[in-house]
Length: 141
Image 1 (tube, rainbow, N blue to C red):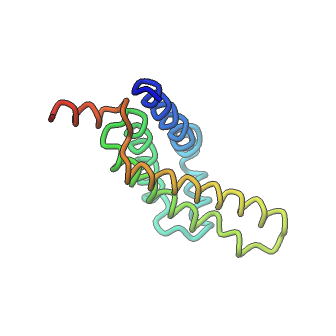
Image 2 (cartoon, rainbow, N blue to C red):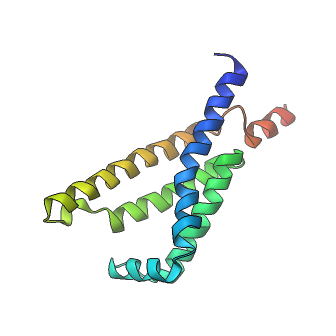
């Protein structure tokens, strides 16, 4: 695969992956801040408003970082931290008795596990050829 095509595929993947996080922040958590904080409190999240504000920062900063490919390893780390906490507090499928709810939560848990794997991949391999991180590497050479 040639350099441009490979880089374009990685760029597209970064944009697609980031969309779920960015939309979660700007489409739900920011406009429904108090409702989301209330839900977080009901799920046992300590300091829910502070944690929600932190989650929003992690989601937006991590998403933009991945889209641009700028400090992508740091951005992926922010999103990984968010995913670990969100999965632990909100998708604990093993605690549910109702089979339908248990199945739905297991799907969310597995989706988040896959996204965690994606973040680990980016942390280990970087943002790819079409990224600001790669541009900096080329300039340093």
